[in-house]
Image (cartoon, rainbow, N blue to C red; front, side):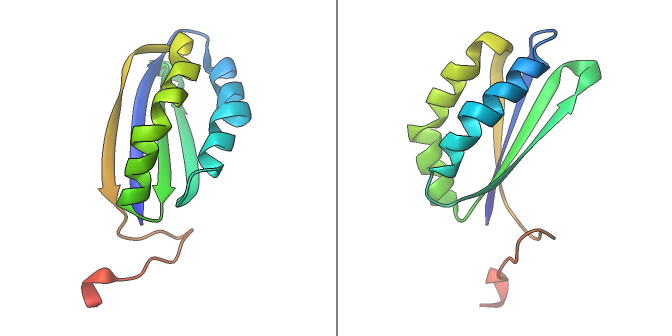
Length: 106
């Protein structure tokens, strides 16, 4: 399993609109992506910051999303964002939500 973490600053007082766009536009786009498993979106009110962690079957599926669809997501959210979001990627070691094969044992 693979994870993408996207951290962004929101313009003041835009969390409601951000939440709406995530629910109505972004999450449906994610659900149509091969290998997409889940997404968690976190909000830090004092900093007007959001972090989205998406889980993918593989790094290659996440990469396809990153090249093909992520730019459309940014366009839809652009009016709410301050600056450019920061993207980090990870191999998922364990999760209580998903059964993850131990690739090291193979």
